[in-house]
Length: 515
Ligand code: SAM
Ligand code: SF4
Image (cartoon, rainbow, N blue to C red; front, side):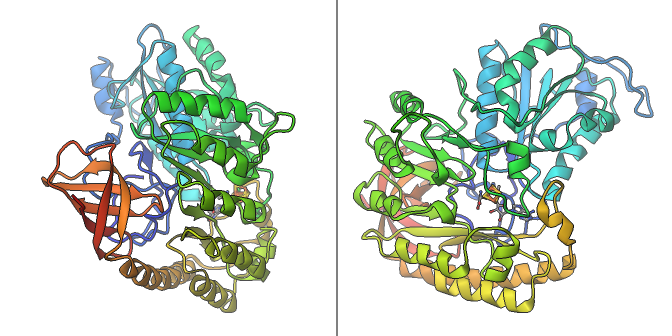
């Protein structure tokens, strides 16, 4: 996700998180219509910057030579050199999967390094939600073609691995491991096979009912912990690869979720973000198990936990009980990410989203009826096959009606193994870009107005970054607003403090600590 944006509409989408180990789609544009992850534009000191790889340097360090023409000499083996580098593309679920993969590797005695150059084992955790995201990993892999003696063992994880399977070995013969997102539980076995000298190993099953739980997870953020409670997806939105790449829905038992939350609280984490492609479709596998709303309340009651977030919610499964839980438990954050995708019922039908425009707006009304103001963010796709000017106008009017606090808008990207592939890709890219800009402009106006109304209000902020400029900090409110603020104090990282908003931009607020 790294490149920062001048103007962003997505700051409120907590999902679009902070890990700088995630890499952003290149179809991004300056107003937040892009991939799942954004870097915080302020100069944070908390996370580490991603490092582009340099096979040439790596080959030099390994003392090997370039034999020219991409000639493939020997296939490196893992041996005793136990260092790894992992680069993550895509959504926060991928970021968290990488944290778990890192935990598995650390548990096997590997050491994580910050550059490809310094690593023996190089993993790319990939995203295939849009074509450009998928292409990115092949461009990374392509760099090794020029340097066949890089001496590294390379693995491709995640959605592209699941989608392309063993074809990755054809396109990039220097890859040794291909493991799809639905098969991570096999990773320790696959690693053991690599360590034993196997040249190529694969994990590509999707028919698993297992979730990816690890004994150890190496989390990037010291204050906010991601925790996947449901993996896969049983919806069948016609444009989406996720059901294919991540397999069917599997929920983790509430007992195991709570056990991990208690451990996280004990380790000093105060904010938990529960993750799932459709997080609110959670079904506790235990007999007489908890509903999603009950799980939220129980997680929020764990001593030491001050904030609980959850993303992404599917409108069909979003019920009154979730709103009531947020209303009655202050530790449940007052933010819901509820992607609509389109304001036109006609397009929603073609997308197989399982709700109409009116039914979606009823969910928004439900959220707005809460006693606590709850911020709402959304995702929108423009240029779906057959989308008309009238459909775009309905999306714009839905923006007016919903009054979102943030929106991610995307240009439709046809994907393999999806139903909409058969519908063609009738809207030219240029026209998709025009529609995207119109949607973003309208949403920007809405956010400017909404954020201006917040000036003068006080927010409790979890401080998660410091600017290089002395006295300048950044943090997030419970509603997931970014506040860039001044304070005379030092050592604020990880603290909850009161900040008064003194100014607003479309994507964030500025303010000062109340002393
Ligand atoms: N499960 C979430 C939901 O149902 O809203 C969304 C998860 S998906 C990883 C994130 C977003 O990517 C979607 O909400 C959608 O807006 C966008 N997206 C998915 N497939 C897409 C495609 N083929 N082209 C463009 N955007 C797409
Ligand atoms: Fe994809 Fe739809 Fe599942 Fe979301 S609900 S992950 S958009 S299939």
